[in-house]
Image (cartoon, rainbow, N blue to C red; front, side, top):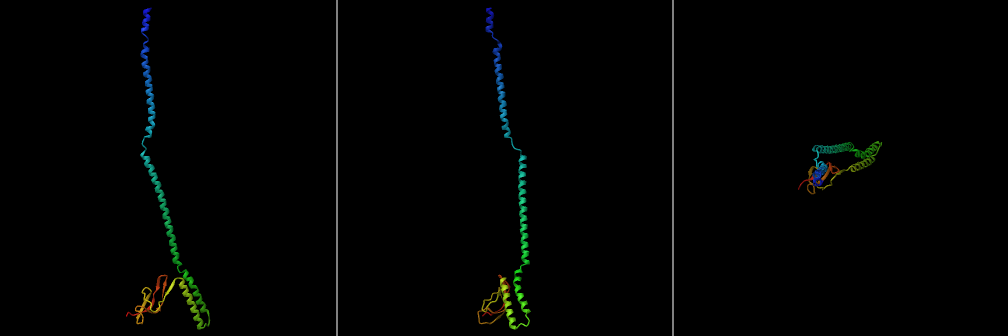
Length: 208
């Protein structure tokens, strides 16, 4: 009896001493696998975020943007061209009207002169004095109409310095005045604004 109990005491269950290391190894393996899966799960979004964009998609987006800008510029150019054409057409119309009706105001100012002439001719048995008075009144009307339309006569007085822009010398005559000055006016000249319609015909003194 004593030998048997001593053998049982000295030889415990062999699984109790050899099984513990196996259990610990399995737990450590499971923990390592779980850690590896967690690191893979966390690394996946990072790798997706760092993935490069598609160059073709970027190029297509840039091309679409350029096409949109080009369409906008083309529309602005067409509108500007239309505005220029309209302005040119209006200017041409104004020029055409100005040319067509340029003498309208001048003709209107001459109508009273025409009326006076017709009224004078309608008088039967008018005396010479009446004819002269009517002619003088009509002449005043005509001069007034010309002045309103900026038609100014060139009628230099004797002794006025000869001006080749406004005067035309018909002859050179001796006279007791400064050389190269107007002696007589044979025909009046006229200006319209600053332009010479016709120069006055004059005689001038000979150089001394």
